Length: 134
Image (tube, rainbow, N blue to C red; front, side, top):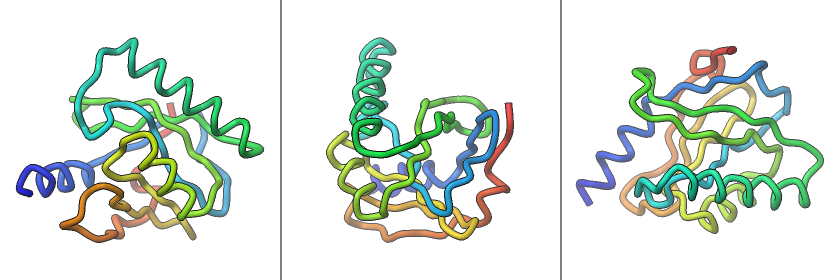
């Protein structure tokens, strides 16, 4: 349990980078990298994210690649801003083995647990304060 709480705290220290801010009215930020926060080899992570991207492109009319990283650059995970419902985002995150996902609605950023039972959704603040352009 302490390990999950520690991860949950780490997930709250985040920044997002892309060429432009996503323009969807609401969206999830999803990745297939490092399921369960277990670090996989780079080639395996890239393959998983390509499979996720293909799955998303068959389901929706748009997605925007962006990078999620620790502010100090100690880790980085390529991800996708995806205009799907919060419930569908949770299904996808669970399917790809993610402990949590980020949700943006009305300009606010939330951290949503998927496979961590000891925590609840947390509002992190204004998305613009976590987003940087490349």
